[in-house]
Length: 194
Image (tube, rainbow, N blue to C red):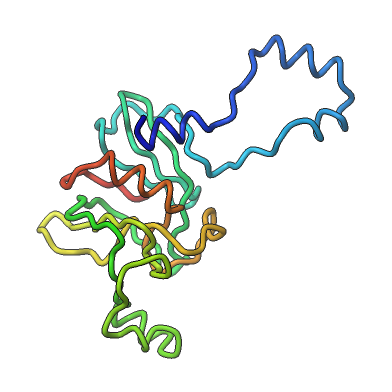
């Protein structure tokens, strides 16, 4: 069983509508609320998507904090993400130009200029590993001319940041989610960020 199958198997099952209706009649609202576990809105979920995205592509909707990996015509696996702060949101079309497991990290000159106390000590880089801000995997996005955009789809050491605008422009995923995506997408995958 691959990582995607394990993640999908872990998703809560939804009962048939008739069973839900019968349970709603049988249980008071307060008891029902206690009985149902809270769903994680950012857990991997298969969803419908527009038919015009090619199978295999990645679509990021920054304002909604979701990344979609198109797995079939009109179908995608949706993952929760963290994105750049308002002034740092990157939008456009790119291609996965390279992939790295446990990537090293170096803040950009712009990051160091914005927050020298926080990022200056890492000007020469930080080796990959569990404390590295890029997390377990990174997908490096390149523009149409083959230039590195400095934008990454990567893991994080801060899983509670998912669903928020907190990054310096990159697209963060929980480590288990980015590991799954990493296994599914080859170099050359188109990425659309809105």
